Length: 341
Image (cartoon, rainbow, N blue to C red; front, side, top):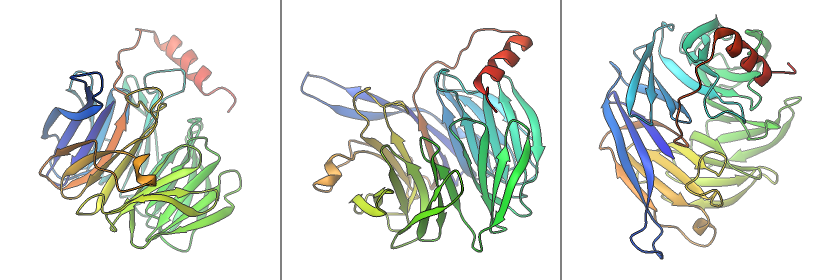
């Protein structure tokens, strides 16, 4: 699997997780650097990955694209006129490459791209103020956005327009669907609200001790959060209680969490227990969360970028190369992937 991290100092960092097995009894892991260079003109605010495709957005209003398998740059996109605040790829379950990329910016704009090649399909403005975060439904047909206008929007990605808009009464900084798309989560300061996806009904509130800066869904209703408390907390969203917590996971704020399940590209198909975290002091750590149930675990692997990290994303590191197909074939493939809308 691979990890990509962005920093305040404009640097993008790519890592590959390798298993070091000098003898059959060893289970050591290492984060091996793939690349690091100043890809943006100013600070990087968001990153996303899908297979070996990766993207980063920054306060220079641009999106940069990468091929993680070859550690090369694929170019950049210049369709936003404000800081890019959130990115997300859509990859159908039966494909190893993304079909679409969506992006959001600080002027309330939202862009939908085709991923091969990266072409802008639609641009709209679902919020009056900055969009804080975007989450794609697992079907790839819908997206949720939250913004500084204290509103929640739902975007129909097939039709390319906003289909729902409501006031929250308070600004939400993060939004994400769970793995099944049956629930979604919104973070507001030190609380995370769990909602039913079908009718947005509030199911429960998760109360953290300090501000939540990152959320990541796990398996079986588990939600991981990190933030100013410097901990990694696993919540049971069915009961609304803490399942377990890694206390003082970092000496600084936790800015990103990636759950490496077997579906998301774990080292082994039978090992869905790896969680990566990044903090503002520049350190990325890998954890076996099974140990956190009993005691505070030691990191399985660690990398120090010596920079102020702002975001983290990860995925399986598979080839991004796809068969050469014509435009009509691409349309049929995309229609098959979104059938039933």
